[in-house]
Length: 278
Ligand SMILES: [Zn+2]
Image 1 (spheres, rainbow, N blue to C red):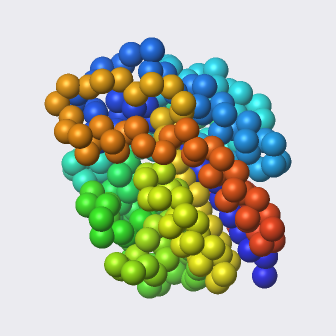
Image 2: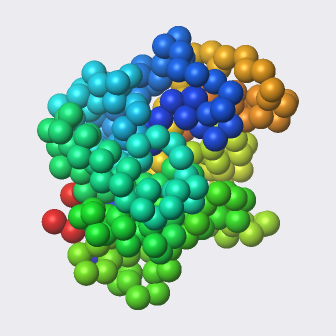
């Protein structure tokens, strides 16, 4: 069986993040478009088709770069209307906003949206059923990590395990984010803040450990994490929060390239999530 990898990005702004959304308003000075382009260009360099999870609220700011990604063959999927966690919405509200955002993005970019990833990985069975009902073919919100306090998880007991981190049921797919057994429980090795914040020699150790056994890998990142530009000084943040936003950004693209090379060396095949199962 082939080994399989998916490179994804959650297209959201700095001011969409949990930490800043009540403290910062839109400011074009801190636009992330250039960082998103760096990521797309890196995937293009290795002839990889990635998946971009978009917020409806980011269409305005990122139209050009999203069109650039589409022209280069990358897939568009949905991350939500804005960055509100599904756990803060009633099921009715969730269904309405997801349906509207899906239609708006499909119309705007003339694409078909097949996949969804919840903000803050906030998914549960009810919300997942709504995603299925609305015609999505896959979800990639299953993180199930004890330190990610706002995340939920999906019960995959009745699913077929196609790969370690890809499960299927009645033509619907769940792409879960990988973690590996570590000294203090589990270490997520799928990207995001973990690859940026954990010292690289430690993370490299766990990534290598993961790839010794893994047959599947899902990577995710946010544009601001790979940016070299300045993070604004925002009032009301403590030193830990400031550090969280600033640390490890300059080196991130090089880390992604390291992971891509490792995946290639290990014989992984890259796919956009929407191509899976077709
Ligand atoms: Zn997000």
